[in-house]
Length: 419
Image (cartoon, rainbow, N blue to C red; front, side):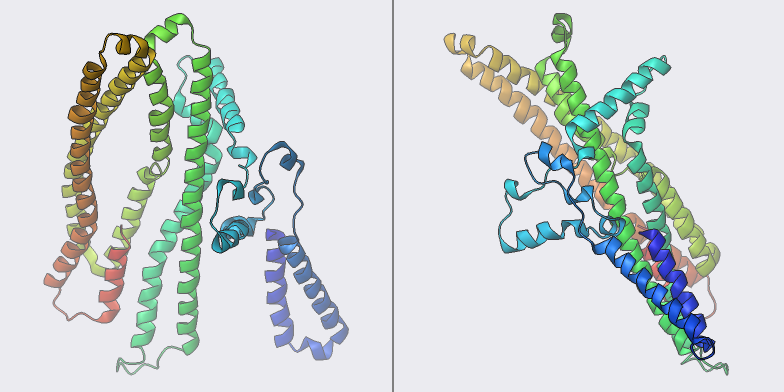
């Protein structure tokens, strides 16, 4: 697909050169032959892109219809056009489980479970102290690394828009400022506007691909760990069953695996956030000079506050996990001894004990978690505003000359792109 796309781009550039050189008059046979070859390349590109793919033999092994992502092209993956038939069907009637496609082969539990088992065996054979993180990275890390490439492209394009906006404002000002210089050509403004549209389209594609690969990686991690834990639970000895209750095993599969899945959505922020801050500070320095240090001071001031909130939330999450374990153990004990509980009329006692764990421990802790989460969201939302406000305020107070739109609006746009 990319081969024919690049061929078309190269042919189009050369065709423009041939037309500008009036080669269609001097060497008409060569020009006609070249145009025929260019047209055939367009047809080949259309066939490669739009010709319907045949379903593979995998469809005979599943209950539902094969997922179109198995044979979709690279452009279909980038634009999610492989989901168009399902969207059209959902527009005409309500979607049910029977309307959904089967899972992709790479996303099935068998594939994800086998990948983790193979990676874990490699850790056992090569390392004295096996690492779960290295095993997960070896099994599911390739799409996650590709997501990092998309994240880098998205971050760079996010900071390219303010620079293009600055050039566009400069182009507009050239028609109104009485500096004695001729205004910039119209084609320059058109090219800048088209570049802003292209960068916006490119940024949208990159951010959606990043989230898609992150969600897929998290789903595969949860599927692989759940399958491995379930397989291990079926092989536990009597001694192992005595040390791990059913509630603990269920928590491993339902809660802990879900936490690792959620982690994949934010793990890239460990390097992306400093990268964005550095680019933002460099852009602000070019626009407002050393006034951007006030914004850095605000961020440094907010780091300890966010750290305290994060530590508080971490302690609450640990306590919540202990409460869930206690509730799961109690429910398993009630179910396993239901006959004795009914026989001795202990139902009210066990119900009170269960309500105490659920209401007095779990729900109270959940209220604290909700309050901490609200405080964390407040600090995260106000920090970009405080950075922008302090930076611009210091810039205005320390500047003697009057501000022009050429400086003000790109600065504000750059600050807005910081979050």
